[in-house]
Length: 219
Length: 176
Image (tube, rainbow over the protein chains, first blue to last red):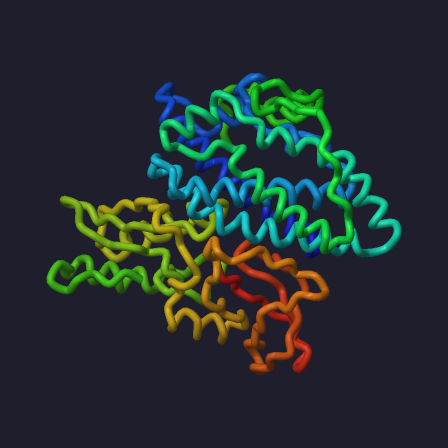
């Protein structure tokens, strides 16, 4: 499992790099003197606008690879569209990130297939992971005022426009893995509006305690 | 590497390129930062030399080290003052690794990348049991009988392979 440990760390490194680039740029656009660290470590919970899927607890390896496949498939589609953003810096960040997301998607999809079409135990775990993770995908595509403003200014697409491609790519992976595409449910999470699951507070406590205990501390 | 038009390149800029050709990449020290294609331009801005660098990966931890070693090398050669500018667009691709760089990679035991097929038109390729992976020849014995052990290696830019013919494990610089 050493290889997989390294692979996950490498993908995490890409994601941290992408987050740093986007947060630095957001801080510059905001013109309130916030740098990437202040935006990452000192916001209040309601000010984090992330899809709820990414704040769910770690779970087992089946859950990890399924969540990664769902997120990477989404990010790859989003970065691809952001390459045409009216904001030149965001377009440049996207052109780099889309190449990385492609490797993440491919790697996670490979594992979904291996586990789904693997042993009875690995298949049982993939089915359980689908039950847990799948309902959180609906949030990706639920447009709100942010999507309307982004589409109007040319900053980026409405996320609902990515739904068709996301569903067909995920269906292809699940078919290869001999796993069913779960039925749609009415559940709609709301992390991207700042209303988070109960798991978010624990993540922020771990991530922020050092900056809150020692404001401005650097290493 | 971006060739600077001869009529514009001052002696200082030319010397700077020669110095940079000796600055190793911290993660793949067999290659210089020029071989890797991350030095996009060297120009004079007033008194200062400006070196334009492009990051390989968004999260590459070597980026800051590279900036510092570039500035240190220029200072040591008496070409300062100099500053490094980070340029994201166009995004770096392994296609920018020079022919010389590819030769050095192979000698170092790392299989160089093939052409980067990262166009958005390329469909997702599920590397399952049924899918065929691209052939990566062994950098030691040249055999094409190799197999991938892991999609990610010691750094984000490499994956791990094994040669079935000579039995040696090796790293492959992934096309990006």
